[in-house]
Image 1: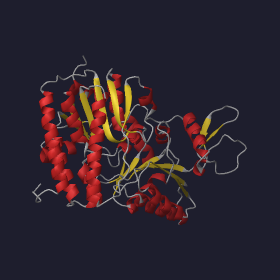
Image 2: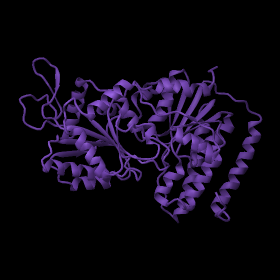
Image 3: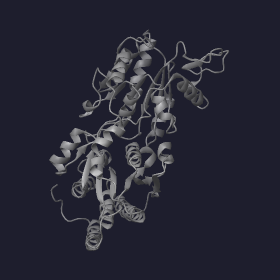
Image 4: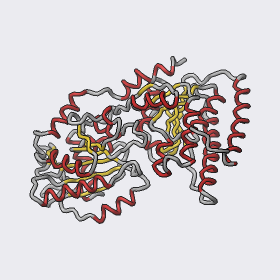
Length: 468
């Protein structure tokens, strides 16, 4: 990156303080020996409950007998397997409230400084680890803090690159904004200080080497073992549970049996569960409600789907479930409330961690709106859907082909009109076991894709060395 003139005084002060601290730590490190064999810190400066890949890392390490300090924000409850593991200890990081005093640049600099101290303090209070496994992004200031902690402990630093933080910042500020340029410089500089690097796609591995001179190993996201097709009994139990709070899951018409949802019913005499006649199709989209996912694309496609039915197309009614949390959820909920659909119902529940895989395994089709800010990462939500043998329609971006094979396990679309046509084509024969939707599901069943544990053991375990 070309020089942009003298640094603003806050950054110069920060650089000086950091240089002095690092000098002292380097002197200290000469007197310390690496230790903490068998202990690993898995860290993310984000919500642990919404960081599934880092939870998977922790579970894999625990499975191999490592003691894991899982560090991050505790906003959303992690998966119960994490909570039940005797080898995993949650290390909460208090989330900072937004400072609204002074210029935005001052607010940001102050936030970074406070987060740096807070994260470093937390990292230095855990038991000495042999390794710190850190998620990026967010990398500012977590990479520097983790590296300094690694110097203190004499432990290795592994960065798991999910994306680039500076490309995410550019969505809000623009590519040439000074903060974006500083963030890019920071990631390039501190990223090179890691001992090992993981990344989520082959495209990112190549880009890390070409543009950052960082050697990384690709660890593709893989579904955990609990992402699988949901048996009918469990589907029915889930639908009945959701029907207590969400109208779209309730039975459409009065029924002599109270044990009936919009999608399933239990036979009173045999006790067996059947799919309801004339049931709607269940469409699910998981979103983080951020700027890199244009949810209006799905809404416009649903408007076209409604129009197809009004024009006489023999299509099923739809229940569209959108899960997730994020800053734009209230905005899009406002748009949803203004829609006047007769054949489509939309709900936006927040599901318990254990219910989300069950819902994916019960759905008929998934929709992914994730657009990578860098064009180099892949949506984990699609990985989870494929684990449940759920076909997907996904919006196009550069390296999506590493995951979604068009016309094989799903479809790729570029705009709302193309998505609407795909929904019409896929649901035209619903719920018949003929047509594309069924063949996509059969292809996913036949693929027998590698699961997370197997992939992790092959790629990550060798980096950690033998446990002493």
